[in-house]
Image (cartoon, rainbow, N blue to C red; front, side, top):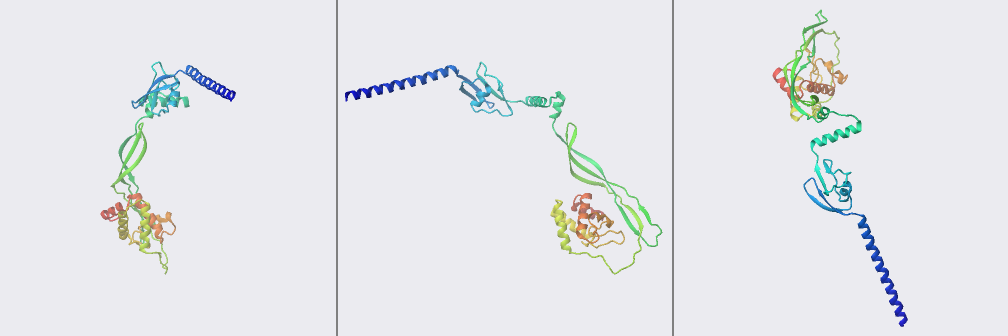
Length: 320
């Protein structure tokens, strides 16, 4: 029994010695590592004025910022530069770039990519501000040609009884410029200052045999107006504009697709003059209400801008 206790005691002593040796080796390795890595204090000043005192073994600015999870924003710069080492004063200062520095950097980057040297004048032009002006211009309104049927007794086949003359309207634009060049133009308003004078041509009416057939149209007035309202919405016009359109075409034709003015030759719901103007919207322009309405709304858009303006003109002049 005594020998057994001695063996156990010896075994415990050996374990203690081994443990002490391992601890000694660990402490020694730490000391060696610390000796190889010079730890220093660095002050980091952020662009918002906050200061950070950090301890690091790194010397390169970018490595220190990465180690401390500090990310430079595009509008920030660092002193010393990221690829340099911390100076003797142990400071890293982050500040915001000035506008001149941003322009200079953009020029440098562009020059490196395109290998083009830019002079100061070219750079300044690239950063010129956009200016906006209100421009008023006078634009011609083209006249229309109206045909009138002469009596069958007339010997003249075609005769101009009134010369046409273009009108004028005043258009106001909002125009944007950069480097004294126009880059955008948008119409704000327009005002007619001189109405066009339509050209009137008298033509001999063709002699036609009288027949029993008559021009007929399908649909009802309610259907015509419902279609016109949907097209007004497509143009972006208001309910007030549609109400004005109803009044306008009530006056012109009573919304009758076969309404025909025997004296002037105006035809259909919008009273196109001559009726053949509506042919580009469909060969059935003499009877089809959709063809007539599509042409009529396009005419109003191009001539007046909206049904309310066309109705206002009709009330003052007696025609549109």
